[in-house]
Each structure stands twice: as structure tokens, then as C-alpha cells.
Image 1 (cartoon, rainbow, N blue to C red):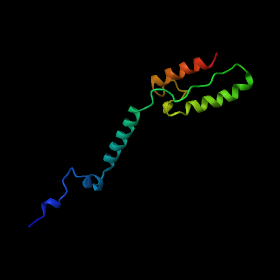
Image 2: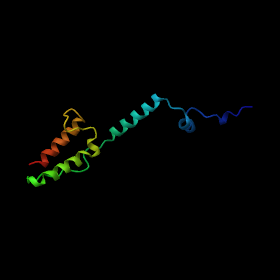
Image 3: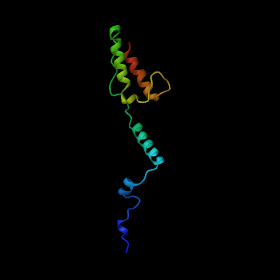
Image 4: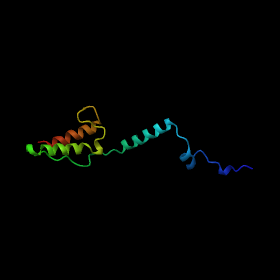
Length: 103
């Protein structure tokens, strides 16, 4: 007799792990991961931008701080030189923080 109980069902974990993925499956999985990451995107930058004190000597320090500020995960996909990049929320947050930092 056959041993039907040893046959893996389509929903068994071993089938899911050892099944052959097509290129389309991999693309779909990658898109799902990206969508999930975007859905959990930070709602605000993790740190504030330091204030520019108006002293010309501190301009290079402010520029360095701004560059670090823009490298935060919150701003992924935003290019400050392109007004159409990123999300509206990212652009609004950057404008608000720059306005607060620069007297």
C-alpha cells in the first residue's frame, strides 16, 4: 500500500521552503517586502536639524549636519535638489525643519 500520510500537502511548511520559485515569484516577493517597509516607514525623522547660529564659521558644520540629517531612513527616496522626489510628507517635513533651523 501507499503511504499517503508522508506526502506533503500544498500548504505544508516543507513545500513552501523547498518549492521552486520562479523569477516572477521572486519579483513579487521583493515587491511585497518593499511595500511592507514603506508601510512601516518612520513618521518623523529620528533627530532634529541643528540651528544655524548665523556665524559664517559655523556654516560648514551646519552643512555637514544637514547632510547627515538627510541620510536618515525617513528621507530615503528624497533628493533635495529635485522638488518632485520623495513624498509630500518628506518635503513638508524638510521645509518645516529647515525653516526652524535657519533664522
